[in-house]
Image (tube, rainbow, N blue to C red; front, side, top):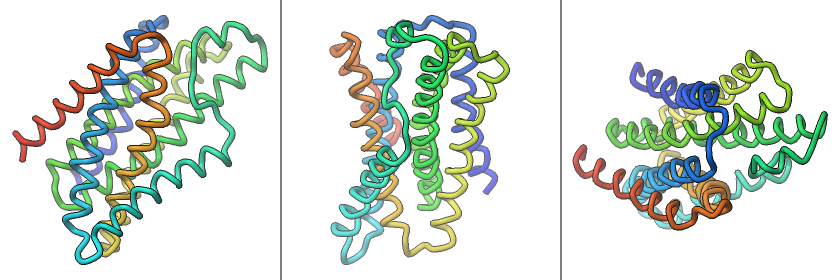
Length: 251
């Protein structure tokens, strides 16, 4: 349990670390953020497949294929449903913000922050479910991939919020809240599969589906929208291979 709490704090704290970097470097180039985000996408992709989806098949029993496929689509559809009912921006492009002023500019920034917060909950749940499977090294790798992705997220929200007129204190508070949401998600995921181990195969696949959805719907399009497609693609492959090698070495 102590390891779960420490990991939850680490996953949520990664967003705060990213926000601190964002305060230091307020003008982060799209190319740099795209490369870092693509690397994180590769790590998360490997974590979703190796740490969540394959274990789901392993623990699924007689109906493992049906359970795993159903869980993957349930996770993706859940996030898609949230995207539809909660108003938010999918992407943030810094140049767009410069074309607006006043309340409209502020509302666009806050919607972007809300988008990050929305996806932090299921990402945290994915980290917690990994611990519920009982494989600590695998769970730590999953949490590490999610935490790595949280760093650039924390970085990119600072500059726009400050530019929109939000005070540094409130800006940091908003970043901290998005990180705390992930801490809550991690604990929820862990307790859910601990209380009802029968749902573990479905929960693992569900968590994997949410991660695949975020990677495909949010991360890859974002990294390919600023002219850095080639570098982002190779960064994703590097991230995937790093996670793959780490899994073999730690396994």
